[in-house]
Image (cartoon, rainbow, N blue to C red; front, top):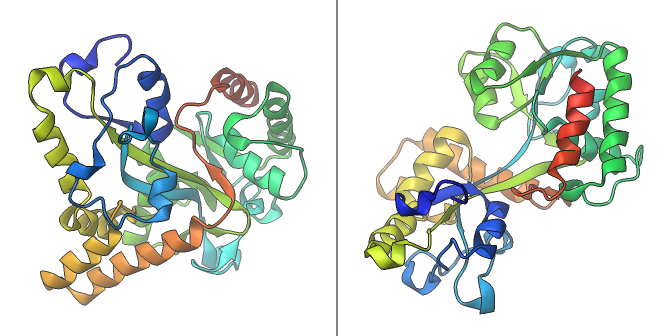
Length: 308
């Protein structure tokens, strides 16, 4: 968008919700008029928290189309831990003799805030805002991770979704930070893997839709708004929640759509479970993924030090 003028070619763009900020600052986004979205009324307070209001309150900069609260997955039966939705601690990943040498971590910067959730909640390290940690806070997290690395806690770093699934299905690990669809892929293979409900909190995120400023001048605004409105509706909500366990802006419409179209009871139950899950997870204080981390270089340098 900034470097290559993507707005000249695309009517809708998407990223984690906080990424709107540098784009709006450079006048690269068009405020979205919510009065033109038929599914906007009735949107929950949860979604409103993840929806940045445009300058002067005239519309919003982006509209979430999927949300989740990421944590980690674990072989609950082998570890003698409760299956979801029973709560477990991030300690399973970072400081547990049962998982020594049997933990996989995100090889990117996400391992730093994930570990910070555990350290902040248990007051092991003093941390202010996990979404925007200082250099010293990031270094403290990296130092803790290095101690656990030297103790032999971790087995592997992954880069991709496929690697996450493979580590589980090959039974190379007993726990790993992961996206919920990876846990579901392992469950589909008959493995007793749970995506954790945690005592401490989650990496709560929203993926959002934005409209480039150039759309107004090329006459495709109606088309863009129609698409965004459809992605807030029942058909998309029902499919998304049943397939991946992700929430959409109007999950109530997803349940209604599934019932109206006489979906199998098991599939309707899966959608209802997604809504219940999100209600349980999003009440935890820690923390909203900013999407646009102002202190990104600190996170990256801390993770690089840990990896090497």
